Amino acid sequence: MAAPIGQPRVRIPAQARAGEVIDIRTLISHIMETGQRRDQAGAIIPRDIIKRFEAKFEGQLVFAMDLAPAISANPYIAFPFKVEKAGSFEFTWTNDAGEERKATNDIKLA
Amino acid sequence: MHAAPTPSRRVMLALAAGGVAISLLPRPASAQLAAPTQAAIDRIRGGRTPQEGRVTLRLPPIAENGNTVPMTVSVESPMTAADHVKTIYVFADKNPTPDLATFHLTPAMGRASVDTRIRLGTTQDVVAIAEMSDGNLFMTRAEVKVTIGGCGG
Amino acid sequence: MWKAAGLTIGTAALAVGIAFAQSGAPEPQRAIPDPQSGRHFATPETIAIQDDDFQNPAMLWAEEGEAAWSRVEGTAGQSCASCHTDATQTMRGVRARMPAYHPRLNRVVTLEQQINICRTERMGAAALPIDSRPLNAMTTFVALQSRGMPVAVDIAGPARAFFDRGEAFYNTRRGQLDMRCGSCHEDNYGRSLRADLLSQGMSNGFPTYRLKEQRVISLQFRLQGCVNDVRGEAPLLGGEEFTNLEFYLAWRAQGLPVESPSVRR
Image (cartoon, chains in turn cyan, orange, yellow):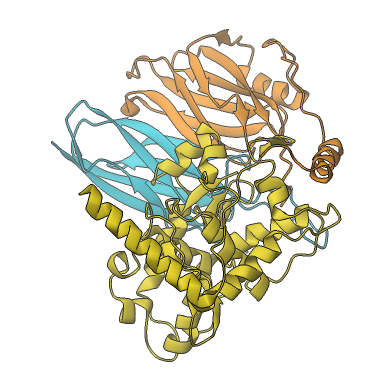
């Protein structure tokens, strides 16, 4: 059974000037079980990680990350974005079991 | 205050002796990478030779815990449709498996820079390779010393 | 102005003096009169994570606690908010003065225990296990409302006996290594135990996101780790011994700002 994917946190400025490069910061609650650890009975605890993160703006992929077990628990991912127009972001985190957690944020032009 | 009573000092030494000494010897930047790391890099290279420069890895030289090491990887690039970073591969040379992360970038980002937090099992080199839109590869590496604490609890 | 301040301090000192005179116990003296928070012994990278509320993973716990604050649980059909309304107002300062003496129970209770008292007695809900994720989340959320306020526990009067027991635990050598808490945190702070820089063991940052555990931990979970480190047998989490010790530790950190939720290695 896959560990729960917690509520994501996303920080984006509410508005920006056209041409401005903003920082998008994300944090999500997840154990990121490596598959290398053993439980008290000596059995391997199965790997269970967020394996993929995608950021889309108006449906277009702008950034993606393939994660490995060596990404820390509660993955923190931050990246830039050059604002050209107002629109909506959609962020998707996917775990090993294929379960997804999404967040959406809008940005306006200043 | 620091005139510690001898029993506790003995205890400190006992604890210290039980542990693994931390290597303070510097390793040359050109030191050979572990076989799994080299194999992973060779798969990306496909016959190309990565060049030095343009990629910057920002990592603490000493991590007080290997579970949460902040990392910034950035690449000098105009990030235009004609000239941008497509992919950044990051490896941890001495982790059980070398893969750390693969970042897929687009010109929409405006700047080629990503922050995340990584796990490092031991003192080792982190290697970053950037693949540009013209197919050129750029590579850098940085060493992080992962300390071994005395407080197991 | 100065005179007024002097008078106030004088009056306060008098009041404290009377309180101690009443309980008959001499005023305790701190081994470290000007304590330093654990952040003083952390690396810049760790401090940077703590100081950025977005990056600090403990804020995920605080948000879970915030969501649980107004969630109805138990047979009474109540949530925390039913009695305590807006936590940003009503919980301000609570973390700074806990643990505190509970007259009806005639013992000292920690913030975690008080949350469970509310759950079982007011909400008709089950107590949350000590150091469990939902309890750590609620404690983190409540503690956050006191961030920056000086730790100020009240050890006078009937609380004093529990303080004294906590102090006795602190100063008792235990485990195969035969160490008291102060062997590390008073006699050797600022020195390295292998690669760990020993802190003064101040509790003002708890609950804390511990990098080693990669989760928010409660103070008593950390205390258990300390006792294990000296090869001792740790008392029960949430039990009387650790609760009195937590009370004593809060007094050691008296005056330090509440940093909850901090980030520590």
